[in-house]
Image (cartoon, rainbow, N blue to C red):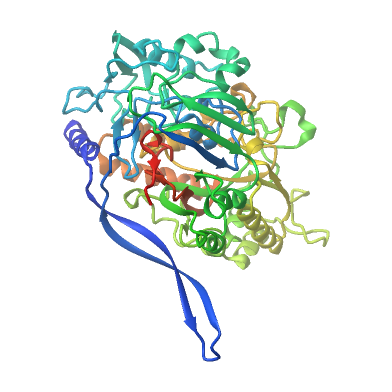
Length: 611
């Protein structure tokens, strides 16, 4: 095992050190053609061409002066509820905090790890990762300061672990620390992370925008149950990034100014950042592509033909890239009946099952009724692919056991008939044990998702399932307000829809979201990653095998097996393998979409285009 694991980490080390290598990328170009018809009327049509090209990505470094530029303006239609990713389950909080608080290392757009606060990436080759897989040692860069001018030390790193691993904190990323037995400060700049068992993939704690370092002095009174009351801290965290928050209005806007103690004295170029939240995806796209009001807009869930037309204005461009993000329907395995009061959607050790979605025949029929190709063409043509898998990429990790998953309305009807789930009173709605199959289906508010809902409601009606559609403002739906009944983590409906993916290429953390330990509920402030409340010891055993396996080929097979378990038990219904789609202003140089980490991963390097 050690030899195969050593080979794996030789490969990992080579991947980390790769730079400026030729890569195959998918490029979408919008071409405007003017043709003259026989009746002499000129017609302009928009043609979208997609081709695969091989290009060499070369970073251009422009020497600038700190604060030389004006203000950057961002439009995020999913407004952040705080600037603290450990106390929110939303990607929007991870994005908006990424320019303030930073991890030891990040992933670049090619999925390669690079150091941020660390001096280097520890590997077996450089001695930083123990040959027995039982520990990893990180060294902080010298001279790092927090935005308040105090030094960053190993005590801050260890405190971050203690904060997030405390079960009463309700940390949304606690699974990233699940393999850790303890951490120790070797000296002020050196941290040794000890694992409870051999851990072949040690790059989970403090990697990517999902796991930043927080300042002990600011947060030490916020550990455990006290965390929920630390509003000021979560609105204005002290960080090491290029910017710091000076004004925060929850679910509305954020104003950032330059961090005067940022480690590069010549960066960032732009003097401030103003982030406006709210509205919808189409308004966000228009702001960056048509009107020029925004320099960057994230997560543009807008029909492809609409985006293509907007780009003709010449104000901005759309960038798209795929990593592991999957748009899916999540099944609630617990009973969301409001009559249950505090027990609504609570797992209760398996004693509160959903009255009909606990039946695999119902879940399977719902999946069979869906036409994934139609949905994807409607919402993400050119930037998405129909998917039958929860883990949709990269190819080495993708299962073929679930292909094809074509729509089969008649098959779904026959399955329910055979299971005795039939319409007994002639109202068009089937019943299971006398309970009608009436589903409340929620998601965030945007045109593409409402289109998905409308299609799926019709298809489910065809198999005898009635569906009530709900859409919730994204700031609330993906927010961290534990008092709100409408967050996706509380999951007070029967099914819901959203997208997420892996942080980098750590599939163990992604797949840990379906373990019994991570069931979401009141005990963890509804921040548990296991939103469907699914619990199966067989799945947990498979994940334990993945966490203990060092051979890359075997890890790939275990990821496929875990994917198949989720998909074939219809815990989630995968729909579309989504590319990240964002808009960048033509006036900004340096913005590069990153499907593996924060899209603002290199904001300190952004400058003004000379064009």
